[in-house]
Length: 204
Image (cartoon, rainbow, N blue to C red; front, side):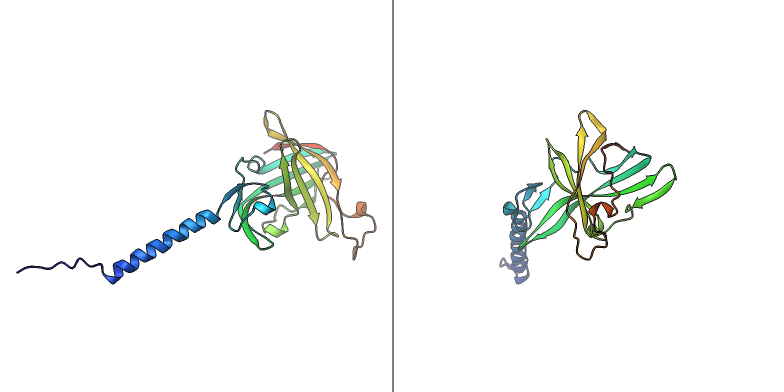
C-alpha cells in the first residue's frame, strides 16, 4: 500500500501566509510613520505618527523635586516628564516628550501654606510648561493661570556648570492676561505665587 502525501498547501496555510505578509507590511509602515525626531523639530518637519523624543535627556535632568528659600518663603518645584504624549497640530498627529511643572509656596514665618498645585495629575491642569531649551539660554518656561484672567508669565531655569544638584530660577517677567470679564484692573493685582526674584533651587 502506497501513501500519497498531498504537497499542495492547504487553504489555511495560504491564509496564514497572507496574514503574515499583511502584518509585516503594517509593521514596516508603522516604522516609517513613527519617525523619531529631536525635540523642537520645526512644525513643518513633523509628520503623522512622528515622535519628538528627548534624545539628549534635556528634560530628564530636571525631573523631580527642587526647593529654594527666599524672603522667608519656601518654594517647592516638581518637574514632571510626560513621555510620548499625543499632540494634534492642525491635520498632523504626532507624539512628543513634554515637561510640565507644579509648585508649592510656604510662608516659613507663619508656617502657613500660601499656594500649592502639587495635587495636579491631569495633563491640562498644569499651569507651567517648558516652552524652549537652548544651551545659551537655559530652560524657558511659560505660566498661565486660566482661573485668574489667564494671567501669564515667563521665567528661566539655568543649569550650573559641574553641579547636578542645583539650578538657578531667574528672569521672571509678566506676560499677557485677558482683561475682559476680569475683576482686576491692574495685572499686578492678580494673584501670582511664582517667585518674582531670582533664587537658587536644590535637588531633593
